[in-house]
Length: 83
Image (cartoon, rainbow, N blue to C red; front, top):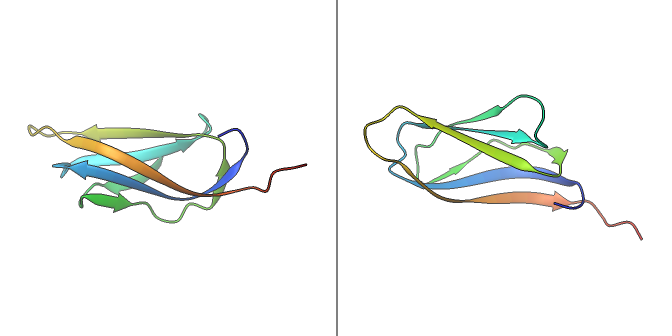
C-alpha cells in the first residue's frame, strides 16, 4: 500500500485446509504472528490494530490431503492523505 494503513483483520478463504497453520508478517520485518489453524472455510484473524504498508502470509501443513487457499481479504483503515 503506498500510504500506511491500520490493519484490522485478515480473512483467509480455504478449502480442505484442516491442518494448515497460517501466520502473517508486517512490512517484511520482525516476527511472524500466528493466525492459527484454518478450521473453517473463512478464518478470521484476531484483531491486529497495527500500522503497516505490506502484509506477507505463510502457510504450513503436514497432511497427505492437498489443501487449497482460495483467497484472502485484508480489512484495514487507511490513514488520511496529506494535502
